[in-house]
Image 1 (cartoon, rainbow, N blue to C red):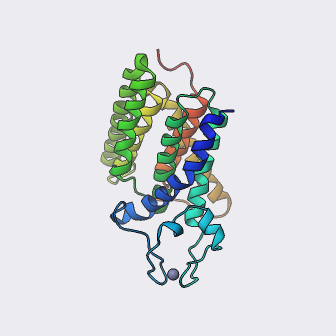
Image 2: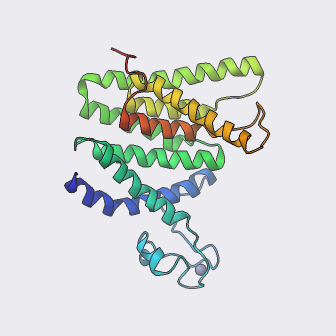
Image 3: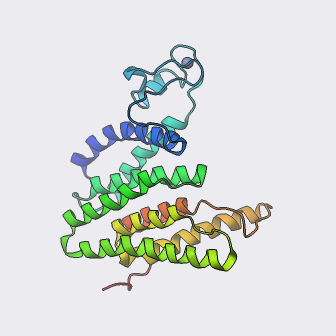
Length: 253
Ligand SMILES: [Zn+2]
């Protein structure tokens, strides 16, 4: 195991998760994420540094506000645990050291957009565009020879979904894929390169189909206009293909 990676990463992850929780709550509302401090929803008590120590303070205070004892809820500790899970999953699935931190950054970004899309059917540019830039930077540093494939992945991801969305709009007269989906696929393409994009889209569609079928089996009527958070499925697929490689290994050079 990668002990020299795991110790700092597991210690850092709850703090990252705490920030991801702030992003998930505030970005869809268009609120400032950096400069305004978190406050208790019940009494408005501004949380100090001691209240923001992730996981530890939540367990210590049994999930309640220090001032009014109102419930803080389990959302933040759940995101903090998920951020730790990303670290452990990356360490288990990734054989070599240098890309582990990159895997964490990618996983944390995917986690954030997956939850926001599930809650709001929204993929904010402030999250998807950095995913493109950081993915291209990581490719340029760690895989110089194939950096062009990652650039093609970003361009191909964006263009393919934009084209499909345009064709669907003309055919059915309403939106199928969102513009955010195209930017998210561009971000994923920057990380996994164009050769693995077909696998990502295929797996995401499969996940979406499985969810739709399972809700149909449970007796819910589904129609063609029902919305599924496709970005959530893309994010899950983008993570699995990054860690375990493509479903279609024969695509590409
Ligand atoms: Zn309070």
